Amino acid sequence: MPKMKTKSGAKKRFRVRASGSIKRSMAFKRHILTKKTTKNKRQLRGITGVHESDSASVRAMMPYA
Image 1: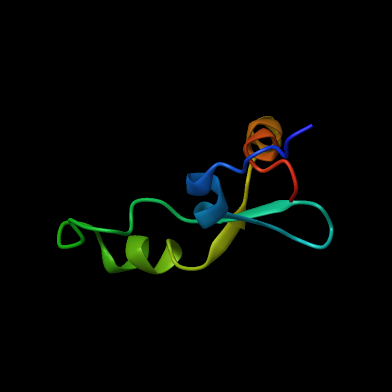
Image 2 (image 1 turned 120 degrees about the vertical axis):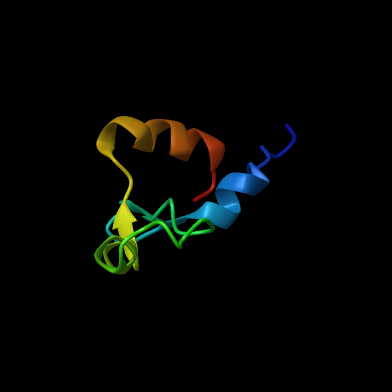
């Protein structure tokens, strides 16, 4: 049986923590930053977890994670 392939886009965007939860970076921080407030840009820093309703589809894209 051949190995399953990991989606390369998901491989670049998500990491699985030791606890099993999935971490992701924040959206809306790439461009058109001049019209966004400093508070908004500061709160978009860092990482957050993937919502429980989306974690099943993310795990399907990364079968060996």
